[in-house]
Image (cartoon, rainbow, N blue to C red; front, side):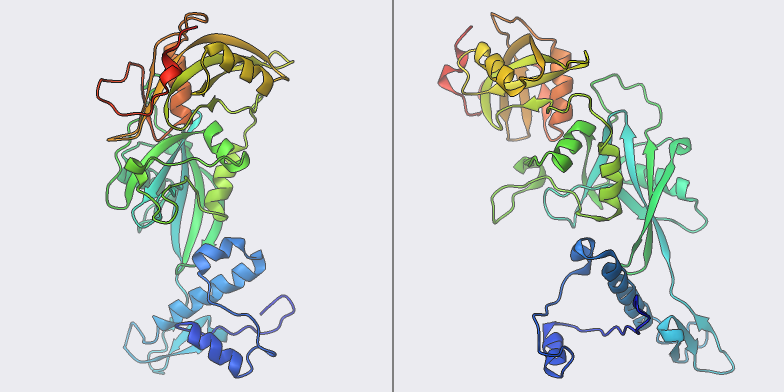
Length: 390
């Protein structure tokens, strides 16, 4: 029934020819522009009530088609209660069947300011999301969270930290997604290092730690982050791969809630050129309340480190910007994505390299940050004036 208690009927159509026939026979007065949509991808963009009705219809059709015969005696079943139950037609048996529900967990695993996201083999390049899986028989939700994360990524979760967030129907065909947040079990991993990840290679082909500021910049700042071709392959149409997460749904809601945690100074931590070699500076940014954080800025057009500082002063005019050293960077895409951090500014000195590496790593999750001069023979786009001193 709809919101006005009018009955709603679901019909299974194999292709768009069925839609055309339905319109031709008066199913839609005056015709209309009708087309088939993928409920899995389009559902999150629909009105919540319409999405709920379509999800229910999909689940009921799939369940009804698979329950045509009695699992007890083999006799045909007949629909009852508007299709929400099927009854064995053998009066001596009379077994009743109701739609099944398969509980599944989906979890945001965190380690300090980082969260763990994975890429499934069947997904398009660049797509990452929370880890998920079905609950086994006689297994608690909390145990399922711990097991799934360890199976898919090798990361150990503290079971006592597992916290329920929200739930959402997932009618593909009949799941109930239960959203959780959990922390990594205590590990003696000093910053800027993160707990090691070992994707299972079967379902999860890649998994990485993403910093909260990086996710926030992507979800709210309108940033488009490219994924190195050696990691995610290439989109045959655009020639590029952009990081993306599922639009709408429980995964987006859980990730958004976590990423929305306040940042006293909202400017991006890192702004550098996407390729080649260039000068960079480590800068300390302070607001009028005395709150501060370190950021990295780099530009292959800068002949001197002072040019980067001048540009940062203009960009961050409402903050106090103080130089904390400078050096050089080189970005290498192949055979594996690496950013080399090396050298120093003769005017501003050597920055705190471990801090630069930490900032760069959390802002570039697809790259390995190496604090050394690039090896000879490594190919990267160098700007001839980069070696100029200041």
